[in-house]
Length: 292
Image (cartoon, rainbow, N blue to C red; front, side, top):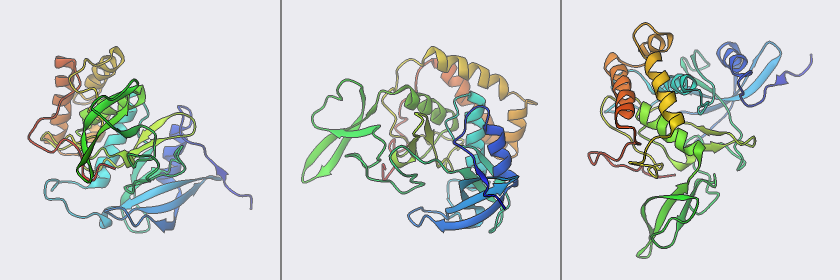
C-alpha cells in the first residue's frame, strides 16, 4: 500500500481539503505535549490517501475555568478559526470539532513553525523574549527602536528592567485585530507561529469570546492608533456576516452562547465606530502570565 500523500500547510485552495481531512480522517495519537495546561495530543490524521500532522485537544482533558462556565475550550478554538476565515486573513490553522480516541475535541492542523517547532502552550526560548519567533524582544532603555513597537517594561531580575517590544509587522497587526474581535484572553509569545512560507499563525484560542473585556495580549503596540483601511474593510464585511441568519452567525451560535455572540457583534461595531485599536481597560491584567 502506498504511503499517504502529505498535505502542505494551508493555502486558499487547500483549506477545504484540510478541513475534510481533519474532520473525517483516522486519528492516531503519537505523543503528548506535557507542558500544556490541558491535554494536548499530537496525532496523525489520514483520509482518502492523504495525511497530515495535527493536534487533538479532547474536551475530557480540559481543566474547568471559573470564568468560562459555559461551553468548552474546544468549541471556542473552532469559533476562533471560523472568525479568522471569515475575515479572510487565514491567521488560525484549519480547526474542526469532532470525535476522537478520547471523545469529542478540537483537532487542528500542526504548523511547523519557521523557528523549528510548534509550541502549543510551551514556549520555545529561541530569542531574548523567549518566544522563539523573532517577533518579540527585550531591549535596554525606553525606546523601542525602528521597526519595533513598545509594549511594557519588564522585570528581568537583579533589579533590572527591559522594554518588551514586538515587531511592527502587518501580520501581527492583523492578529491584533482578530484578538480584539474574539476577545482573546491569552495571546502569548509562544502562541505565534511564523511558518517557513512567510505566513504567521496564531494558536491556543480556548479562552476567547468572553462577554466581558478579557483582552490580554503582548500585541499592544498599536493601542489607540487608527485601524488600517484594510482592517476597516474587513470588519465591515465581518459585521454583515455576523447578522442573524448568516451562515457564520448560525455556526457560531452552536459554539458560543447567545450573550457571547452578541458581544462579538458589539466589539466589531465598536471597532468600526472608534476606528482605532483598543487600549487596555484597566479592569483586567493587560498582559498574559507567563507572557511566553
